[in-house]
Image 1 (cartoon, rainbow, N blue to C red):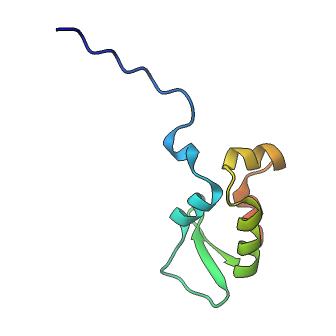
Image 2 (cartoon, one colour):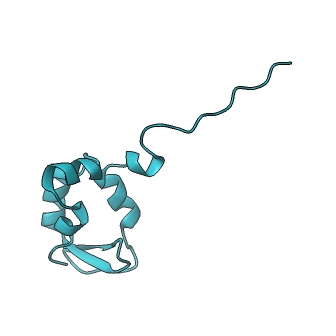
Length: 87
């Protein structure tokens, strides 16, 4: 009987790094809170952040399909800081 080949450590993005900004927001949505015309998200800081529907729609249309690291490379700051700037 032959020995099974060892499983090498995976190179490349980790599972959480493969998520787009839109995917991340889906996991951050806070459905327990409601304000008309706004969406609530639990930020990485643990606080609730309210985002106006129109701004959220515009932000997702422009950046929702990209990965957070690509946003950081292109803009020099984290996408959270842009989306939650006025929350």
